[in-house]
Length: 273
Length: 318
Image (cartoon, rainbow over all chains, first blue to last red; front, side, top):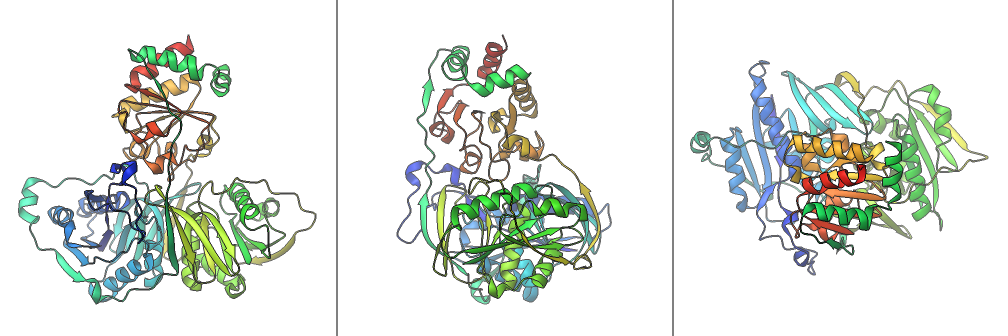
């Protein structure tokens, strides 16, 4: 079974200070000084793929793990890490285009990659990225390929060469379904899926393999049907009162006496307990 | 503008979907030439009458399907709906709403945005606003192709109870024979707890990554239980499986509005803060005065949350 994990790196936006949130006339926010990290949902997708690889021998389903990103040349550290984690093909589609709000374009690239460059049985994607928050790419690529899509997947198990067992989160419960491939699976909030670290031996042995690089010019990009016209920074500020004190105990007393003692819900709930 | 609200009556949260859609329609589509109706999917016959009481518009198309399955829902929509005559489709917040919105727009060659907070109709044009940059920024988009398909952001408008109607125009379709889901070979439903309790909480204690361990998480939950508070966590805690997922607060989890919210060891990422921003009073306890949660709180204690919460529990319980 061939599995392609489509992933993206993103700056850690929580590292930005208030004054860093500046929107320029081209509706860009400079985050170039931040270290790129794996998008959290994509990180889960990569780790889930690695867990499937761990299990493939015991369930006797041969697995080929591949990974693909659309990015500039500055993302090599993470690509080398994926090499070291023994992804068979690690592909970068070279692009310096502004793809923040272009899920149709990204989905069309992924669909063309699967149809023209390397066929796959399962596509794994995180459900959204932090910058665009588009949350549409996985669904669009499924539509373009004519494949079914299971969203909010939190657990995947191999069944046989043509089926996977997928547990996914629904609005009011979970579904565990045996799915025939090919399919697109988008990963939601899957616990215990922080990506593992490769061993030093694997870093030295596999990390230096070449990264397969394609140009975005080799693909036809679909047009978007939504146009960004404005960005506005959201400020979360309240009139904070700092509780001073010489010890945590003193601060706790001041907090209770000054701010919680007369609090209706606290008293109501306490009366019930 | 001709709009249609879509209800997933196969889900147990359909009443919340209906009230959410109703609130959004009253807020943004109740004036001008806007004309709306509802398409409601359901599977169990006995749920039909209840569903009729949840329709936020004056007419409804009831579509019976075997169960909620996106492929079947999309084909059912295609069967009952002429997208050329509809300008705007409104889907509720939640996973089902967003997945159907995107795929329906793609099939109808329309425009789509998910988790929309606000819209503005100007003639035939639709402008929509939604958060981007992990909830730090509000983006404004023009949707350029009809039909416009949007799913709502949680809390985008205050939910409004469905009024009792004297007359409701009902059209019915039975599409229980649809079988576009043959790729599913076996299916098992697993009931889980939901975020409903947290969303109704009036007193909330929330722990974050600063708790460091599962044991510390359990200790803080015990304090919350003793104080009569509901207990929630930030995403990193839930992702580490220190608590079940339904305790997660933020855009991925519960969107709360308690009277009092004590936030312990949470840095305050914007996606988390969205889940508590409607709190009346936010108390932050953190060792780092530079943590974003401090500026966004009403009261802050700069100290180790364990010592502060232990003392607070002692004071209150004695």
